[in-house]
Length: 112
Ligand code: HEC
Image (tube, rainbow, N blue to C red; front, side, top):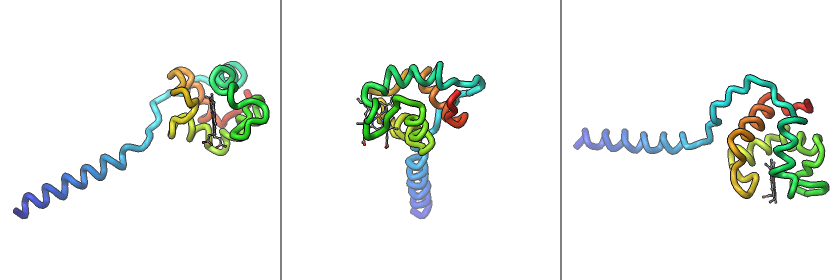
């Protein structure tokens, strides 16, 4: 009986641990080429975000670099696109776009 209890405890521990492991782990992007805001990021925003995040939009105006940069620096782009996967609301960006955005954020969200 003692034996069974310890097995049960081990099992519960394992379940608890696997639940905490359910946090977001970023995909393994290598990020070994520099991503340009102007040539890589802006077109992604234009195609996937600007329809809503336009001039004067209260949850972020991405019609200019500063607007997007502000949300990026607050960690909100990362949170919405990668961690919570709420943006864009229509579903996740294509993987190639995700990689570009991820690497651009990693590089410090530069106006390059
Ligand atoms: C269909 C309209 C729509 C599109 C397209 C869209 N968003 Fe949003 N976004 C919203 C709305 C509405 C909110 C506010 C949601 C809320 O407060 O819960 C928001 C909130 C956000 C926020 C949080 C801002 C804050 O201050 O908390 C970020 C960051 C964001 N969006 C990024 C993006 C990015 C990046 C894209 C494109 C890849 C995108 N969104 C595409 C409508 C949109």
